[in-house]
View 1 (cartoon, rainbow, N blue to C red):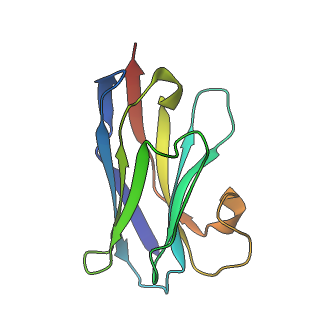
View 2 (view 1 turned 120 degrees about the vertical axis):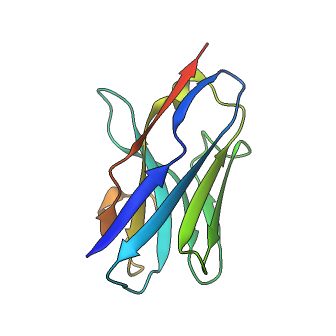
Amino acid sequence: QVQLVESGGGSVQAGGSLRLSCSASGRSFSTYAKGWFRQAPGKEREFVAAITWSYGSTYYADSVKGRFTISRDIAKNTVDLQMNSLNPEDMAVYYCAGMRNAGLGFRSPRAYNYWGQGTQVTVSS
């Protein structure tokens, strides 16, 4: 079983930055892509960003494009999310997720096979 652990969440004022990191451990599976999702209270889990593991192709939600950057370190088996110009609408629990195979796109949670426990991001205005 693969375990994903997120770190780097916290509280920041509007306009500030945070960097989330996700590390993987446990049984090794081939990875097609990894992504970040977020879920605010009372809302559905929504796609934030994804990156393909081999080629590093990146995909972003329109709401974060230009402000967030996803990256991966294959040697360390980590995926990071640099978040700049944060605003209160970005406040949520952020989840890291891994996808073994392509086929369902990147934006649906159903495309991902394993998930982290989440890390809270709080943005104050």
